[in-house]
Image 1 (cartoon, rainbow, N blue to C red):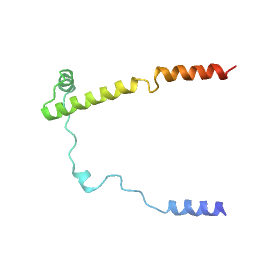
Image 2 (cartoon, one colour):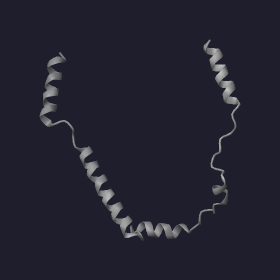
Image 3 (tube, rainbow, N blue to C red):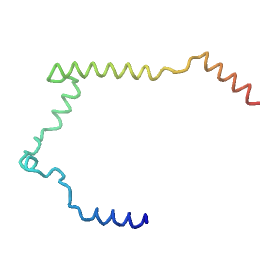
Image 4 (cartoon, rainbow, N blue to C red):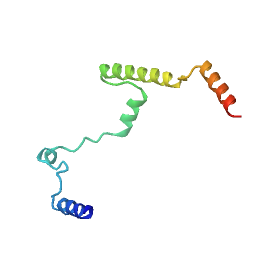
Length: 95
């Protein structure tokens, strides 16, 4: 019975058309992206300055938040006293 259901589902799936993958009229009329020299992009990336000061502040704040999170993740979630207690329990129970 399950084979019949599977075959019916496959047969119905084969009857569908291809989905529209973004080949609509807006995509067809869109311009190609502007090509810019790579050297200018690399130079601006190395100076670490952005043309929009708001974006620069936002990125700096986000970077600081990520650094803070990374520092918190590096800290142990278990205290030294708890580690000592667990090691003592392992030593007691291992033999």
